[in-house]
Image (tube, rainbow, N blue to C red):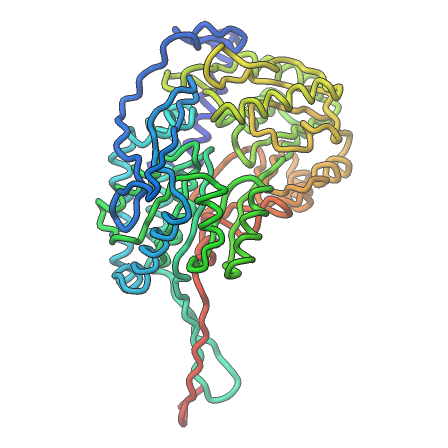
Amino acid sequence: MASSSTRISRLLSRSSASLFSRGGKGYLGAGFSRYSTATALEEEPIKPAVQVEHTQLLIGGKFVDALSGKTFPTLDPRTGEVIAHVAEGHSEDVDRAVAAARKAFDQGPWPKMTAYERQRILLRAADLLEKHNDELAALETWDNGKPYEQSAQIEIPMLVRLFRYYAGWADKIHGMTVPADGQYHVQTLHEPIGVAGQIIPWNFPLLMFAWKVGPALACGNTIVLKTAEQTPLSALYAAKLFHEAGLPEGVLNVVSGFGPTAGAALASHMDVDKLAFTGSTDTGKVVLELAARSNLKPVTLELGGKSPFIVCEDADVDQAVELAHFALFFNQGQCCCAGSRTYVHERVYDEFVEKAKARALKRIVGDPFKSGIEQGPQIDSEQFEKILKYIRSGVQSGATLETGGDRLGSKGFYVQPTVFSNVEDGMLIAKEEIFGPVQSILKFKDLDEVIERANNTRYGLAAGVFTKNIDTANTLTRALRVGTVWVNCFDTFDAAIPFGGYKMSGQGREKGEYSLKNYLQVKAVVTPLKNPAWL
């Protein structure tokens, strides 16, 4: 199986090839339209080839209704119509889930299993996820709006790879023997932290499920996971597969519900030992405060970003345009590390702007279940209206609207791929996280200037650098205050590569070996030695 980073690169390559094929004109197959026409969006949406099987809470290994009996609708972003009604968990349901997780940790077999046995269960779960690739992908696209080809060919294979990666770690977690002054034997134990509360976002539901569930289970913990209210379906399906793989009851519990109720109850719960959250910076502050005010549980946060994508004067402009386009518009722009501040050197700025505009005009927007679609709808009406508000702000503040700027079609939450030029650092579109298909192109003169401007933000999640000069690349990678720098690539993710932010983009790291530390306690054990042969 190709690596996840390779799959993303292939997607970008196919996108680039389609752009420059057929005499340099974007080829639009039957049923597609450039974003500027909305005929295809008025057609009847394709019916997904999957049934919604699970809409209840998963607690103690069983699907159950919320104690209140309440449900809430999850919507199809293509139309705004209801897909299904899902159980709405509240604090009393979180209490039940935490109690199940606590019992599974304190009395159940999971933390007492050999690491090899836990590894085998995780590998069986990964095999089942792979077997049900198409169903998981269909649920993800139906609930979220991302292109089905992205879900099926990139994200579900990446989900499988992540769990196989963490299965491999399960029997390689161990402490150390530490030399000490005096006649003592000193060892450290790396112990599971206990019950982990996890809150995942709506933009990459299954990948965030894996980023959090994988290391927690590999370390021997139990979990209460709250899904985003916009996208509850795929995690419930995936969790069911884990139980089919032999995961003991109560080890993985899933509660659907809303942030102010279920999320707040989980963050402030006195019997949760660890919390992990992915979402906005403002919500992350609330989560951190709730954790601190309750039992001072440690918190991992992966929050917002306003990532710079820096195009240097030696760049191949055609390649830079395509990569910058991918960096911003991937996943409808709903990506925390999106390259949403495109800094372009003044010598190539005008050429870049014209070609970026042309590329946006060729972007294929439509029903995400159609083959060849690059961009589906935004997640919901709230995000849709937020994006349009930022676009209006960009126009009012004096940026040049090169293309886009409005909704696409008359139903659903589709937004035209939008490009602004002559953007200034003080404009809201250059400062705040839009989380949508809006590219802001800024001009710079030299490296010192762009380093200062790129770092002048409250965020520090990621950055992109496009240059042929290794010295330039080295200068920028060390100067940019971000958690990830991609050089001549972007959104290259791998199970082993850590991810996280500086400043208000979060704390801690997910993925890779670094993520295991989030779910382990270190215990020092000191024993006197009597007449040791050596020290």
